[in-house]
Image (cartoon, rainbow, N blue to C red; front, side, top):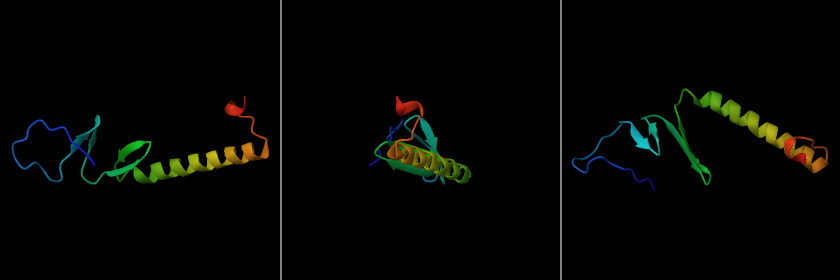
Length: 79
């Protein structure tokens, strides 16, 4: 459930207008994704680059987990 802080309670409000949400502005057409760790919003134009970066990070983390399982991990958290 989302609850927005409003400056006024007069009137019906707006449709397809930017809304403030926890210190950021979410505009019509933006993609909003959330899970137990938080919420992120981004434009449709940013989506391909964010997907590529997210998949690269997931591959990196999979490699680290494989190294840990094999007992060969020597990275920053190996201390």
